[in-house]
Image 1 (spheres, rainbow, N blue to C red):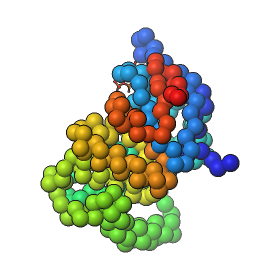
Image 2: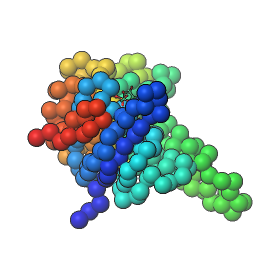
Image 3: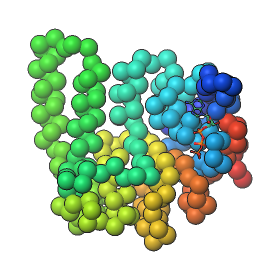
Amino acid sequence: MPEPVISLAEVSREFASQPPVRALDRVTLRVDRGDYLAIVGPSGSGKSTLLNVLGLLDRPSSGSYRLDGTETTTLRDGARTRLRGDRIGFVFQSFHLLSHRSVVENVMLAEIYRSRGARRERAKPTSSEAAATMSAVRQARKGRRERALAALERVGLGHRTGFAPDRLSGGERQRTAIARALMGEPSLLLCDEPTGNLDSRNTESVLGLFDELRGQGMTIVVITHEREVSERAGRRVRITDGVLVEEG
Ligand SMILES: Nc1ncnc2c1ncn2[C@@H]1O[C@H](COP(=O)(O)OP(=O)(O)OP(=O)(O)O)[C@@H](O)[C@H]1O
């Protein structure tokens, strides 16, 4: 049986506040390649905490989290950062696009930040390691524009690559952010209220794109308050007071 993309076993996250809060309570969740999962739940139920754990931005207090077969809870910070950069594409409610950069440049920047992050995490390299790294950096830089253009084609924005973000509709901005998240071929697209800033027409445009990406085998996890969004996902889980329950 192939490894699941996400495998959480009995994951809890406690905050040592006064009084202490158990934001995740023994959460067990398996997400297979190509799954499209919506996580729903009321305010304060633990959705952001779960997203932070899934996105390797926070560590569980107990339990196991395997991402693509790698146990993440015992990894050092540097290895976690690299795994996050390699495997996870993030999509947020606000698109976080740079207004003075074109659409294609915004997408290209994903790789630049990712490789800088990875280099910063490294111990000081030897001179031969440094030469090899420079050669890899040059190689990586070479196809960056082509890869960004391909990602934009994939989200249906091949005709907008030279635009400034402020000339795009909300749906097109989010599609640009999704193209940026797809750079580096992540195994998982982790989306936090991706349509929260969009009207219904633009929401439909983004949901249509998720349908297409899912058809291509992408694994998508979406946290959402919106019924319209959760109903489009193949699978729903509800979190209440940190307890996760699969919905029928
Ligand atoms: N750093 C923290 N310290 C203490 N308590 C926290 C911390 N972060 C979250 N919590 C608590 O954990 C619980 C879950 O919070 P979380 O932000 O995950 O909920 P949520 O479902 O994302 O809410 P919303 O939909 O309003 O964003 C809440 O009771 C919250 O107050």
